[in-house]
Image (cartoon, rainbow, N blue to C red; front, side, top):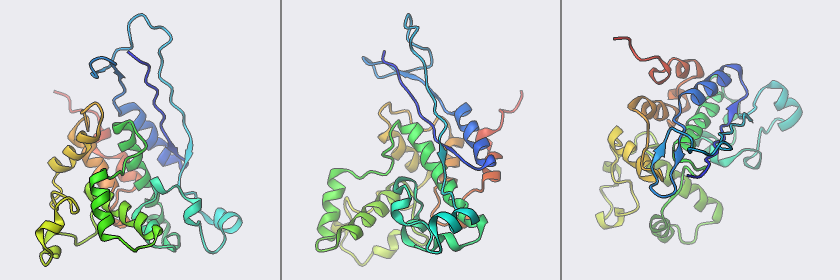
Length: 249
């Protein structure tokens, strides 16, 4: 067996730190067998040097009155001052997203929590990735577009594959297109049921384990919602069934 090291990123706000600590306590941590690929909760026998490291790192959008005045200025943080892997749709598509109410701008960090959970499950920082085939098919439709627009299109497509849909998106909006054009470009299921989302995550997990239970799946889905108003708040997330003790018999 080889040693597996996990790194978890925790948010700066006190309530978000509480949420992060709950994630540490509840996420399944295991050792992968080099030969079988199986996941074991036991540390490798005889290897006393094996241990798991977790680093707590300041992580968040860091938008408040002080940073707006002394760091970002009236124009807010640029895309280069944000980490694109953790940026929600509103930050990718709206340069003035930070001007909203605090209760809404804080949802930026809740999206980031959802991404971190997927990273823990998949064991990779590359949560939103496209297959080479899908990438090539998209390139046919994006020929002549500038690189910035292409990158945005790739990101939005990767969101779709993980059941993060633009409000109102459905197959009926594309009925006028030739069905052959949709093959490999549009998601296999626009209904995006729990079963479909679970399959998407499990198929990308090297250990083919996916979510530990349905509550973990539902927590992530409620964090990775397109509209920030519809995402869980940190208080709602802390009360989510995933973090509650199982009922006593």
